[in-house]
Image (cartoon, rainbow, N blue to C red):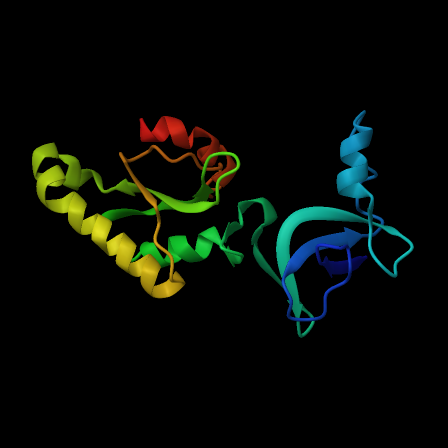
Length: 193
């Protein structure tokens, strides 16, 4: 098997640089059943300087001292003003806010078509804080909002333009407990309502 971290022009990247993880070898499937186009796009990546074809995994990763490190899903990267942000980094930073449910928050890019991308965060609030909605709205919500803005600004020098506050159990996860970023991003307009 061979692992290559590739850049945007299908060039192999040197050790320590983040790019898309591609794999070639005998255990890689030949492609999708009855889907030639998807097979060409995913399973038949041509890497500069290589004769064999590679599978594009959709994962961002890097190689460092013979170890492979994952940096997240390629489709989940948030690009704002030419800078790449990884949702899990932003989520980890705001997870320290005690009023939020651990593991129940997400960062994603938003913006209408033909608009610049903006950072949005969706967070679930601890249920005990929602018992009295009036107290929550009057006294607690603004404090949480300020904490999110301050933390994201401090660590990433951007402000989340939209902060969505959700009841427990709103954010969809996989069976293993990972946030379904793509699914939640699609339902984001519904979550705001």
